[in-house]
Image (tube, rainbow, N blue to C red; front, side, top):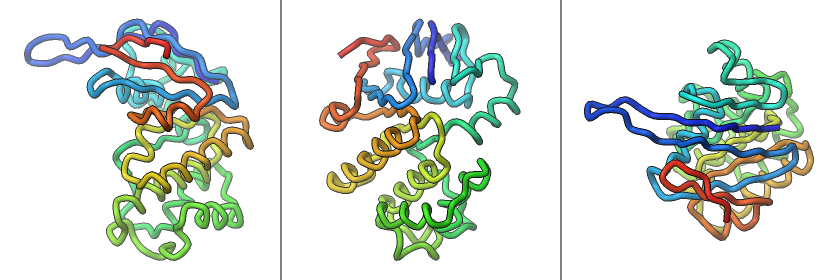
Amino acid sequence: MLTVDQVSKQFTTPQGPLPVLYQVSLDLAAGQSLALTGESGSGKSTLLHLIAGLDQVDQGRICIGEHDITAQDESGRAALRRQTVGLVFQQFNLIPSLTVAANLAFQARLAGRFDAAELARLAQRLGLTEVMERYPEQLSGGQQQRVAIGRVLAAKPALVLADEPTGNLDEATGDAVLDLFLEGVKATGSALLMVTHSPRLAARLDRCQHLHMGRLEPL
């Protein structure tokens, strides 16, 4: 489902080039889950952005299924994000003018996979049933995070990229959300790549790799 092959990335700064990733390679099959750990600044979020097609590699290749995302133009990368990739990043990116219900349904509608009954069940599992008619500004940070997670799961993407998806949740809710992710992977055959600082949560995924100073190290 996902192949990252010898990917390198650097950013331009006033002080000169800043290397962030060095020849990173990993594979993730459909139905598998992989935890990515590493200290702050190690390149974890940069790698997720490259896989999502939100930025472009300097060297190497990234394939999602049969699609080489590094060979796609912006419209092609956007189409992959609509149909194939689900993103849960640290910024919730909810649409302020839409209710919780509409935010939850947004990605599923774009992908042509909206199912009202399934969305209702998902909202219940996420503890959002009582706030479906509220707007994002009326929610706590933890509630907004659950909406962001639900929006992705409702669309049933083939690949889920999650950057600290439980970072704003208490331990019990975080465990419940991870249960949903892992159930979704098993039920749909999708793949999950999750960045986490929690060794306890990382241990629940199929595999774990550590990113240190831009290089992957197995654990």
